Image 1 (cartoon, helix red, strand yellow):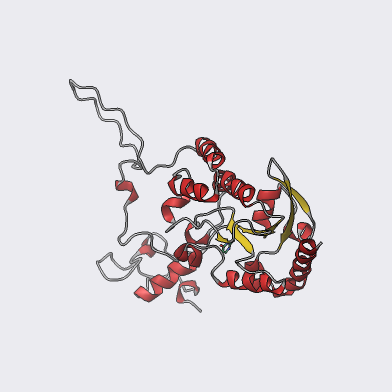
Image 2 (cartoon, helix red, strand yellow):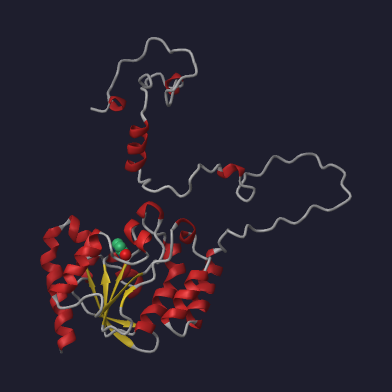
Length: 299
Ligand code: URA
């Protein structure tokens, strides 16, 4: 058992505070039930961070956010010194994203302005309204062939996708490739994208706000690709695009109409490949969904 979780008898003596290479040295002095601190190696610290979901470094050095003038806590008010000039008005950080409503409005306006997929990609590259852009390495726009009859949409890029700039290239992407191959499709005959085009840090779930900000872009992308069949991979993509409230167990395998505003596209929710990797028993049902896609293409 990890010594940190072992129940130890109450210490009889609290050692004096002294400098040492030990992490959390004397933490127990305010918590007499805490065991004495153990030396922690760099490897243990890394393992601790990984377990906590920190799997990537965003910069080469640490950043003290409290030193950031744009995020610093307000200092206590000082008595006003006589000053001839009025204080300069505070100005917004150029890196600070706009408020969510403004970001959604500007995403809508930009998405509607895009007359082609290339234009849409360029506008998304220039869009600063989603904070995920700041932590992602790059935009993950799409893979596959515009004009394909089938479009697959997932939730958001993961680490591998963030590195390569292409959707579904990691482990779940390999499974998606095999799923497509099983019904005679590949990246030349299908188009693949995500609801969110920037990797959320540590692969966390995108917030509803982030999803709403990115929604106009994926909606426009679907409209421009104009597939015959839209496959929503997993619950987040299904609920976001089809407006369903039920879980994927109830929606998968059922055909929906996806309304682009100008046309209705047949849409089928199915399991996300990452879910199938964790729960292979559902591959049987995923296979039924894939056969339904094949049959709809052949009809
Ligand atoms: N999961 C997704 O939803 N999308 C990807 O691109 C990769 C993993």
